[in-house]
Length: 442
Ligand SMILES: [Zn+2]
Image (cartoon, rainbow, N blue to C red; front, side):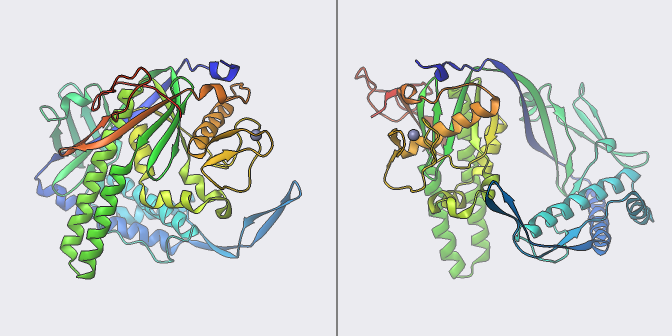
């Protein structure tokens, strides 16, 4: 074994988990509060909108290392949200007029209004939103921590409605009570018929292994120096998407809106079910592991030309953001930049321009590898570099084993399983079990 294989993780990481559970309520005061909240929220959005300053931003190109780099591609009118103290005070005073509720509710409204405006501004600058004032439609009210008092002993939350007037909710003897034992409670969201409670836990985890994952449309391809290559089959998830895409197109052409929405909801349920099983399965199969992923939010920054069509396509259908989020709720997840991960030679660092064939061949040093496995190794190397861990570029000896992991629908719920395959000793690997088997790379 070469040096870079011996890099072992033995450190502690903090794993933060959040789980959202809802408790039904029937209290007319909640609906009244939500009605007021929405009206006030829209008013706050209106006032912020009217005070936006529009500034021109001009195209800019910079020279760096003999290269021309476009910083701002074209002339752009940029909205700046008003944020100075005196504006915020005027806004608050305005909203406090005739406010029948506790003052902190106005602060909760202001904060939500700013987050709505910030997200509109971000989408607008990226070209995803038009220059139209956001409208608040969903009925909800986001609470502030200052409006809540939590009694962890009795498992009760008390929410202040008006000074001296409270709503009490208990989460004892709920189906999830045992799952959130000793967890802390974050800011709740009120809905007309229920209350959403985010439970948070912070645990320190002893990390012993790293797996770098390349996100592909039909599979999640991993590499770990301890295990070798790992492949997680995502075809069942894709077939769910394809089936529902077809169904949705049919009912859309017949203009059946109700049915369309039913399919949307059903698709989301099946997708979430799959992803939850996948994330839980990965945690079970690979305990005490850091999962390294490409930061797909940053993929836009990687020049379009350099991102192959296939790699862009994978984001269109596969819900990577949800998959990453679900894994990060159960295990430690680290993101690295996706730049050049499918074009770099892991041995000599040479960046190859063309991408032809299923085998990657380095023109400089002759290194060869199945293209599907290349990115995961490069993601792993990026992680090591990010951590400042030394390694020599010699991945060859690490590519010893291969593990196949599948998630397949069994009845109504998918389970993680190892596909039937012969292991090197000739014994048949058992399916539908959470045991790890390694296979010789072909
Ligand atoms: Zn090379």
